[in-house]
Length: 460
Image 1: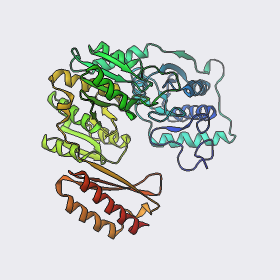
Image 2: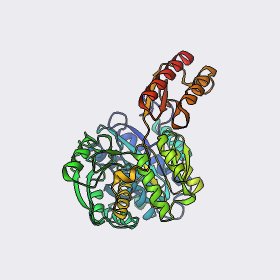
Image 3: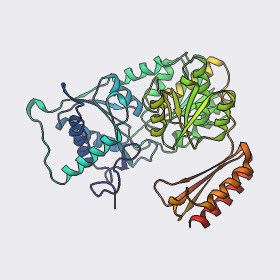
Image 4: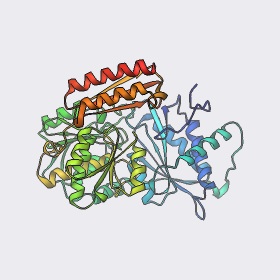
């Protein structure tokens, strides 16, 4: 049974909106229906009180985004919401414009780093923040209720929503990015890999206006080539281009540009943990790192944690997922957080991960210090990390098995302070993930293999 098209199993909304294969799982009818439901639920919640409702709608360049955008716009306007179509822009740009334009709702059509056939619908609340879980649940139930026959209360005459293109959004967003920079990028040569995605125009424009000399790859989206062998999930082209062009660094985005990974001048990868470490020190230096604290997930490399301790910074760790990082940051007013995948949130300038902003700030640190990115990133040593998936076991008993607990204690004793063990039940499959970090890769492998065997025998 699919979770789409009314044959629901569990929640239609995942951690990052509604996603699936466009025109199979995610149809025009579903996009339209969800948009109408969102408008009704927000109206019920009082969001539109006293004014005409307004929404910002953007998309990445996927071919399917064209018809899905049309469906979303039609749904919103039919429910009495005025729509500003901002076109192809990154997810964080749609979030930013939702806040900057005082819109009641933002909608982004993208499946981020997924392959081209997929697409997704993501809603933002007022201010550009992620929609609350209870509102997503309500949208889902209202959509389902009306899909099975209950008629909508539809406005007529002047009550229907009006639709207009808002091309100024591009310049507004670029200006916002530049305003966040502590210094300019003159003297830097940067290779940008845009993943043939949503940042293909924005990112080169922002880096150029900031003073950098740029070389672009993956910046010719045709609707079909998004994430295809390029971008943050395929760094090979970027590594080669940085070395070939003698660039100071390279920046790679994913399809909707909410992530950023980097490459130093030697062609070596700089991951999200290292980027967080570099930005944390830069922000502390200019008194922008509130409470001297960084938020990351439990999957962050132990080398990151050790580096933060050595630098006198506090690290708060959350469950895996940028939503948990953001919740922790909002609750305690922390300024910087992120994931190893390059999803970095700089809360003073963004309500979500922003890959272009992250890349600009990383480049700004290189320009300001005159040090190479390789040197800056060496603040942390990335310890070898081994991940083993153990299938066909009872994942619900990970926390209660005495045999497993004893094996973990033994492994941790063997690894000492320069290693760690993490056992995580998968959220979607009947398997348990065994992650081991150690200063030595062979030790990490042998401990992981031994623990995987215990997981099989104890939980199988």
